[in-house]
Image (cartoon, rainbow, N blue to C red; front, side):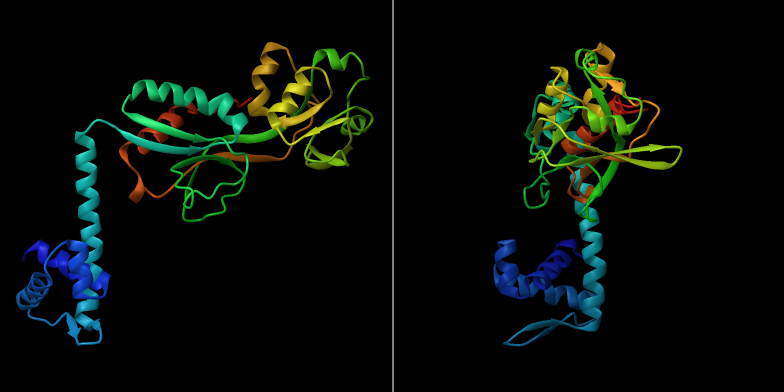
Length: 299
């Protein structure tokens, strides 16, 4: 049995006509027809109903098409895997990450990766808004929260939760913050477009607490919120991953440490292995190595 004859048959079915398959295969229509006839002769069954108006499969042809299509895809994947294994990693990876996460973590990881693989290039999008990976041709994304597209693979790389914090200088100007209620009397840094009331969530002994906070400054940028806290403008409620280093340096102090906050996860998102190049797989492995056994922002 000639594998090329099977491939021609699959192309005819996928194109819906002999002429369509002829164009996609860059093969004369007569050759396409002859190869399908030859395949039918070797199998001893009729695979296609032919008419001047349309082409359709017989019951045997439909069953044969589905079986062969699956195996042909597997063979092509195997060929790609072997070819990639023999070659140097190269190509372009398109990555999406929230700006502040990129500054703190993704950027150092990318820098080390590009130094290790000089023939790989990376395009990094640092939009904080949701990016459709398929429409924008994104290979890998760093995201938190719920995955919106079930066709994508989400690999957890660490926890995500916010903490309440302020600079030592600012804390000298206010009273003790012993409970979430104390936040209502303090100047808080608001994440958003309006200074209207905001709600910060806390948990203690499985009981939920909600602090209604206000302040003199609001911004939609997490980076600017943290910078404002560092400069003594108020109390911030921000992801631990973005301020852990400031706690270690003493530039910020964590407040309400006997309270917890709602937890979610940070994920590495990518498409199925079927569409994964060697360079993408290497970058995923590179990130997983950086967050193993625990993420660097975990406390």
